[in-house]
Length: 510
Ligand SMILES: Cc1cc2nc3c(=O)[nH]c(=O)nc-3n(C[C@H](O)[C@H](O)[C@H](O)COP(=O)(O)OP(=O)(O)OC[C@H]3O[C@@H](n4cnc5c(N)ncnc54)[C@H](O)[C@@H]3O)c2cc1C
Ligand code: SF4
Image 1 (spheres, rainbow, N blue to C red):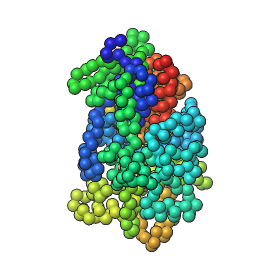
Image 2 (image 1 turned 90 degrees about the vertical axis):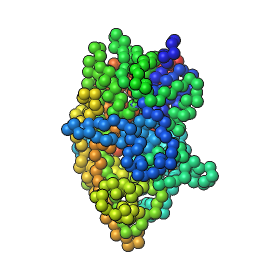
Image 3 (image 1 turned 135 degrees about the horizontal axis):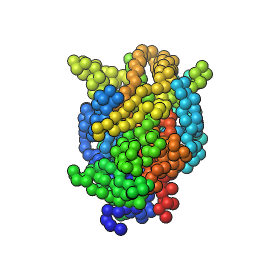
Image 4 (image 1 turned 60 degrees about the horizontal axis):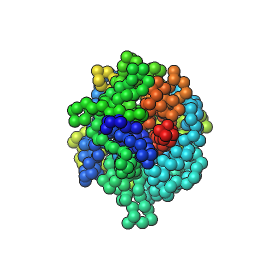
């Protein structure tokens, strides 16, 4: 075996790739991990809102919408992928999310595997990513053993909202979070509970992300090699087209080829699909592993909304991403269709407010708004649609996307504002106004669905083990495999699935 030949090559070090590398490392197999980015610089500016909001760490190329307009997406290419910036809300999908569900605007398809198939891997992933939470409060959460760590408590302002909602017979809960906070002993706590977490890298490496919790431990095994600034540009196949025989990589402007018995893509749902389309050949004229024509189709990215609750009462909360609310997840009596989930967002800083108002707006106005608001993130399911797709046009990434499920999304926004209004008097004669904003196509943080898994090679790209139906040694372990997006944050399911596929690969490698 020559130096460029490995047992396994993994491309990408985000939630999927790093988790798989961690799972395979103890096997002693020769593993190469290829990552186009570098380690994220650790510097004081990690926590500088202006620096981060101006996009100092955004290093993805422009993508394009269906009108050909460039989109500056919130994609990050670093060791750890987008988990370096995530809020760390690590949820399990709900049991019904794996079944066919009728929405007001269409159908969310059934998965070939069910909640019970993922449950043991969810448990492992929660341990691996140090999830803090409390079971039994969220009415939609599947029944399971306790979280590995106790819930992150609310600060008083959020606690008052939490109590108010409970008094109105709602069921708010503690967000399941992957931060290394020890609430009983500050001296033992890596996390200091700061106001620059969700959307920021952690200067203290106290976020349990894919870099810190999986990639760095994996490379302590001598059989695992991590190559950074190594961008995979093409996959080569054998004459039959049935095996990947070479992974072409651009390193410092030079093309190199690496070989492996097994190749696993974990580049994020958009980039993995793009690489397959780019790797078209005589045997795979429409793109590698694309005999179904489905590679890049069914692109989903969640319908995101932000409700800004602006009040006469100051909000002094430092770390406010602690509360979740799923009472409307499956709908309500006069709207028997799923609506989605709600969670508190990380702090909105004055810099963000000032960036979205006219330039002459005095700084104190931005600061007053930032100090008097509570931002909420609303997520409605994005339904799969063949015409919502990722494609490559003149070597550029295009997202052809038309929004759906608007009725449920609008209703969720309306009902959440009504729920908040119902407790206004609770918080001592405050006056509040509510501003709702829908996020645009450039919010691709929860991208998924571009290589869905299934039993039938005609209606899916990957098989039950996330192996390409058309190519024997090619796997995909990012969120590409999702048949539906659900209305829950995706990372824990990506991590759990990587552990599940890792178990299959360990058997295959034996
Ligand atoms: C601001 C923000 C907040 C978020 N908050 C949450 C949250 O609270 N909860 C949650 O569940 N999710 C959250 N997410 C989403 C979460 O980060 C993603 O779902 C998750 O990281 C996806 O994992 P992945 O492995 O599919 O891809 P990624 O994490 O994107 O990793 C892909 C990796 O592949 C590498 N790569 C890409 N192309 C190539 C190539 N050609 N060659 C080599 N390497 C390549 C990239 O550099 C990257 O390291 C958030 C995302 C953002 C941006
Ligand atoms: S809240 Fe904790 S984990 Fe998050 S950025 Fe601050 S110190 Fe890091």
